[in-house]
Length: 255
Length: 320
Image 1 (cartoon, rainbow over the protein chains, first blue to last red):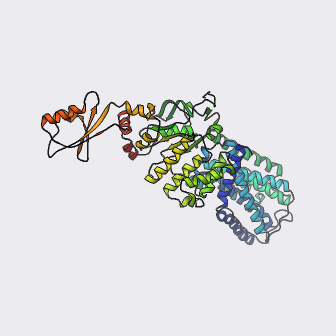
Image 2: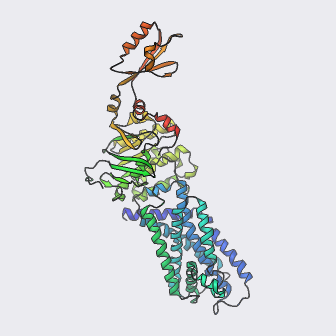
Image 3: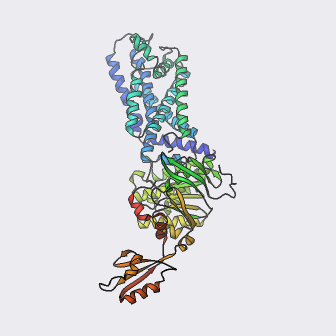
């Protein structure tokens, strides 16, 4: 392994160790929260007509909940790590190290992906007694999972770079990530919405991430899978461009 | 960019560094070299630009103009190689609370492309810095002095040939200062170039072969330590007068202060021979209870060049 590769692997390992050391907070807690959503909503919506042919509400809900949790955790992983390092001052260890922008980017995103994979797998396991999900399009499932987790991890990096205190991260989470993830069709099909909100949903990138992920399970979705993939790809490309520009120029990182 | 060949290059080549923060010009075209194998002190009052210069060398701050090379490798154009050759102990007591001491050091080594081959060196450093008992302790659980030692170990973990210590002994006890300098002196004897900033000027005087004093963003002086000390044309005479005796009027302009009941006179070597002072006292009928002479030290030179006392500067606020 070359020194550059070892540097990347070390940063990745360090980021994984960071969330692993507080697994209760980074994996168990979001899984329990999602499980509570499932119990409450599945009970409240019991008896409603299937949303897609042969797909009951509980089955419909679980992929959405998984993706919502993935989105929120991908963002939280990178944003909290960077903000914490900035506030504690230990980001200097990375800034003084011979690591380039692509190594930072790759390591932070891959660690977030790994956390999201753990969260998603844990959710599939704990929801198994309630619902047996089919997997119709594994490739679409994988692509949408990677695109969603990566895009939100990149957004988290941007937020972490911009934030000067934890309040700033809370602002991002409360006014951007949480509303967009709740209003993205996690709990309902957008076809059930009034025309204005139906149209508005199509401007929400999280809607495509969740809808495409759901397609992977059922082979049905509110919009064609190609749309979802292109939105996901565009969202990732845009966020990545901004993030890499910040890393290359040292925006908010170098005085 | 610096173009010197890495084989013959100085440890640090600093060329025309300028740094502005808005209207404030923190560094005004600083240029100097630090040769391989030197133990070099970078001194100056708060606001002189020492920490800004170190931050530029280590890649934390971007210079508006100028360049820095570490052993011939430009810190911007060839930043990876430059950083692998450099170890920096930051001034602030920073640490990552998620990790244990040994894990933190292994992670730090990994950033620099060093794997298991440096683990014995990590254990040796832990031993030398009296941290072996805390190797598996969380960083959070360490005292301030221990965290400072871990910072030193982190800077040295990849065995860099050039090491910069930004006030490594600020606020630490005598024992730790002694241990730090013993360790750094040994590394220096083995060929490591050591650059330090400190407000304890006696440390710089004792350890460093060459000294640069920065003042208001410019190099006020850069000279070998002995040459710097020798160029001061003064010596100091402390006189404790007997009883209620008063110093003769002619000698009063020479008084610079009072130390333990004795008056300290600053005598220009060529103009005020010590014998002349005793003659004046004898003529005035003033009896002397005690007398001492003191050669100027680095603190005197520092005050002469910057108008500040290093210790007072340290007490008055954070460095820039």
